[in-house]
Amino acid sequence: RAKAQGRNTIQYYDPAMQQEAVERAQLYADLRTAIAEEQFEVYYQAQSDASERIIGAEALVRWNHPTRGLLAPGRFIEFAEETGLIGGIGRLVLKSTCHLLKHLDDAGYSIPIAVNISAEHILQPEFLQDIHDILQATGAKPERLKFEITESAMIRDTHTVVEHMLELQKLGIRFSLDDFGTGYSSLSYLKALPIHEIKLDLRFVQDMVINKDDAAIADLVFNLAKAMKLEVIAEGVAQETQKDFLLKLGCNRFQGFLFCHPLPVAEFWQFLESTHAE
Ligand code: C2E
Ligand code: MG
Ligand code: MG
Ligand code: MG
Image 1 (cartoon, rainbow, N blue to C red):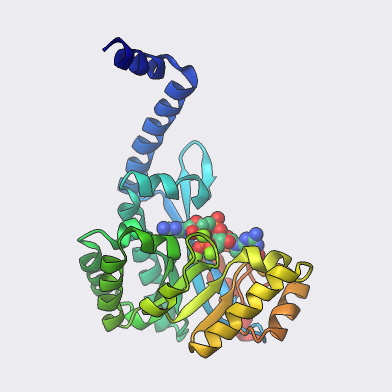
Image 2 (image 1 turned 135 degrees about the vertical axis):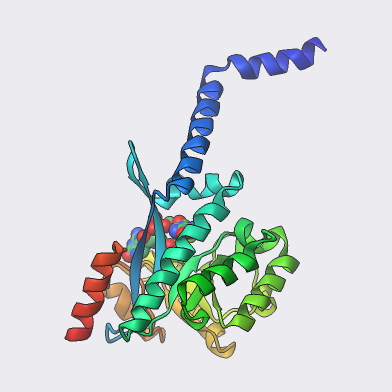
């Protein structure tokens, strides 16, 4: 008994741990307020083909925190996944993206937009209904919507994830496998999942020009995708040399700072209009 109590007391009086607990509680409260007050802003990063024509975009969330400024997803997404708040954020991102898709469609731009979907969100029982409601409310075409999922999402409950994916696929929604080649990578997922596209992770792109191993992995991914009739998009393409290298591997889909940074929606429109006007 003394031992058990001792353990608890140590935890309670460890200032670093107590500090962390306080910070987590604060972040949780802030995030709940952020969801209720819709403090999130969705940025859009264009995706291009080899001739720099825009072929799509990815929605990337930022949190406009009232005192801490604009926060990148690395600062809060994982926490939101752990604490069950991710569904609230995901819904807001989907709503913004579907609104944009409808406006793009009305303006004659028929590009798809990809949204990152956490496993924790996909697995929620209300997920399918949420998607249905958002599509109805916004009038966005499901064929224009892509969901980016990661392989690590699969290990949690592959069966349910696949079931939900197949339902969404029936609506016309397509899927990309994000961060391909990292994490709990398993080639068998490529066979098991209704995937249309692989996103070659930026970690392979970054060093492929100077690192033979990265180049070999990238080459393998392109060959595999070709054999399986999947598209590949390279992420994190930031330099001309990387683009040239990817072109030689047969890549025709690019995303990265070389082409376009993630932009607030008004600037994304400007980028789209200026690119189309050329
Ligand atoms: P991701 O889905 O792999 O997104 C690509 C990340 O690479 C983005 O970071 C993007 O800004 C960054 N990036 C794009 N081009 C380049 C480049 O040329 N060089 C480099 N170094 N980086 C580039 P960001 O916006 O900070 O997002 C980080 C991650 O947070 C995303 O990785 C995604 O896993 C997650 N995330 C973002 N938005 C959402 C969301 O709405 N929902 C969920 N569940 N996750 C999200
Ligand atoms: Mg992504
Ligand atoms: Mg990625
Ligand atoms: Mg990622």
